Length: 249
Ligand SMILES: Nc1ncnc2c1ncn2[C@@H]1O[C@H](COP(=O)(O)OP(=O)(O)OP(=O)(O)O)[C@@H](O)[C@H]1O
Image (tube, rainbow, N blue to C red; front, side, top):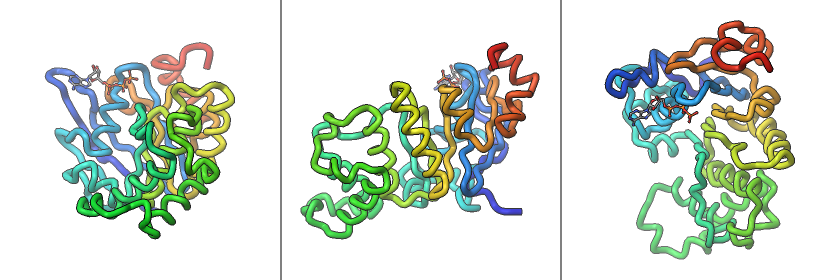
């Protein structure tokens, strides 16, 4: 069997009596978009935090490329290949698009003393940053102040920043949030293509985007995965309809 790029095995996390993650095992295979959906409070953010390193599971493991990364801090997970984009933008709005991308690429070099060097003249960093901007179609905006980008372009820049670390897998937390219909459509197309570069674990409330993009969907309810399957399987699953999707599905 092909090995998962990213996987959780039996992850549990309690807050007092509340089980926010209850024995969660999910995997992300090469080339796929695996969406995690579930009602508010189902435990999606808690799960993502454990995968990315912000929260330690009580039990269970997180594996990246077969290596146990459960005890690694967030920055080290990023360096070994976990690319993350956030629900709230981590971009420096007053900096240019290129500066943001260079800062991302700098993070990958892992040497804080480099901050004292003129990084915008470092050819390797600039090349890496420009390559990432080209990949997301922002190369013509390299000198634009980030604050002047549209919402959708900022999302693309976040992906570019993540790309500078050459991720083996992406974890995306609600990338469609705040985008209009047109922006969501464009980002949907972009992510559909990006999955071939690195697979994407996607937490998303926009069901149109999820159904258009996901190769597989896992449904979380009260911290437990109640179903994993293709879009068709999830749409047809009675437990899922009862718990989450309602009649309109
Ligand atoms: N630090 C914490 N301390 C106590 N309870 C927490 C903490 N973090 C999350 N919870 C609880 O754990 C449960 C899962 O929360 P979580 O934010 O993971 O859900 P979610 O699926 O991401 O929700 P949403 O879709 O609303 O973002 C909720 O009942 C929440 O109140």
